[in-house]
Image (cartoon, rainbow, N blue to C red):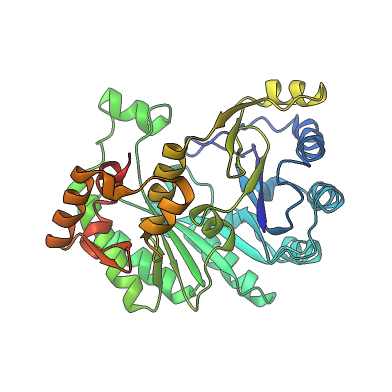
Amino acid sequence: MAGIYIHIPFCRTACHYCNFHFSTHIKNKKTIIDALCAELYLQKNYLEEEPIKTIYFGGGTPSLLSFEELKYIFNVIKIVFDTKEVEEITIETNPEDLHIQKIKEYRTLGINRFSIGVQSFYEPHLHTLNRKHTGEDAITSIKNAKKEGFTNISIDIIYGIPYKDHAILIQDIATAVDVAPMHISAYCLTIEEKTPFGTWVKKGKMKDIDENFASEQTEILMDTLQNAGYEQYEISNFAKENKYSLHNTSYWNNTKYLGIGPSAHSYNHYSRQYNIQNNISYTHSIQKGMIPCEKELLTNANKFNEYILTSIRTKWGSNLHYASTLTGIDIASYPEKVDFIQMCKQENIVTEKENTLYLTKKGKLLADKITAHLMV
């Protein structure tokens, strides 16, 4: 079973923190959509006829597409791929887009999961992030989706936003718990170089992220959501009643996926492909029947490192026996890494059970550093 990711590279406005590929010029939307559908045909053999389990519309802002535009893409997906066993179809949406009529339209297309870009319910923070919705818009969008019978709802929250204390995060979490989506993705704000925030920090107009402040917020988030019944099944992802993101979980569990659109990534166990991050160049190439991507053939070391990078962040941990079977690399042959694992266990940063490494709560705060030490 495999996944398909469709990158919709359009947004109404540019969020000040975002470094994903997008454009606010939507006059070429039809041309891009035609190219996306053409790429689906060009990529029909990439997944080796494996049935599709998940479809994910990301971006950008997929909810900018009309019903007819989405229907067009869906029809092509169904023509090119085996979708009879699809379990989850997710679309990322802005709160201001998720009105009743659009929700009804999404249902007719088979969409059964929403990922709503809330980010915060606090108006000044939304203004700082350059989001165009209000806190009330966010609450209303969740209620609208529930009213129409949707239960698989995820919201995004951004924390670590500079502030005098943790009061806003605590209130954001309380509001999120109150409206009760089944899934919450919580991301610590990072300052990316080629964003407005990156420029402001460089010019001294904005403070950089305070690591201690961010770590404190991470702990508040983990503790509060756990107490509210959300399981932290991946460092940034929390779910009730096992409502995990099937699509994202497939990334972490070494499942094949095909990425369609400018900047989209693909993986089929043997290689990775990275589509070009330019709408015009992408379109011109597709029109000529060529996929505009860089391809990386994966070495055993690549596969080992990728597995550790993704799996260590999850509740399922990194199974070192599976990693060895997958790649032929046995971490026991690296004495310095064996010593590092032993040190981590002694300091209660990781635990080990049946040859599988799991991050403790303390370890989750150090995940990047632990991963770097485990890579070969």
